[in-house]
Image (cartoon, rainbow, N blue to C red; front, side, top):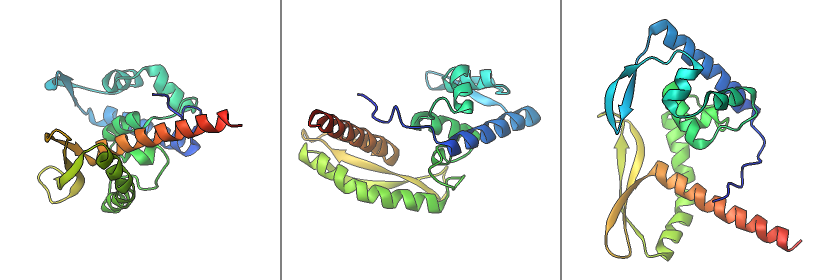
Length: 194
């Protein structure tokens, strides 16, 4: 699917925050000799340090050129990559994208996301309903056996009576894809009719 946001200008705030967080991350790693799990087929096979941009790019699954382009502001930070960098840097991905001033994933951030999702869920719910899918239950996702809610998991029934679960993050990506597609089609129609 074509990304209609491909030519959107780079957010200068995102570039600034990425540079600050990257520098802090590498500095702290060198200072404290932090170790990160090395995964192979979902299993931890050992631990490694991340003390340079090269080691970071290898670990996160991008090129060093991509990191340099993000630092210069010649490339946009994607949502997927903001989530990967955010997890490593210990910051909220939307903060890295310049979409919020909340640096950490706080209760306030969660509540704001839920308000937005409830508005959008009505639209997504109608799409699901149109195709014969049904939201049958939802439950909270907790942070590491604590009482801190970090998300919601939905159970959905398919037209052939099977069920599957989807997290609020996956639902958010699905909604973004749907809205991206609609936006692209509307732009296409507008160009044809000009």
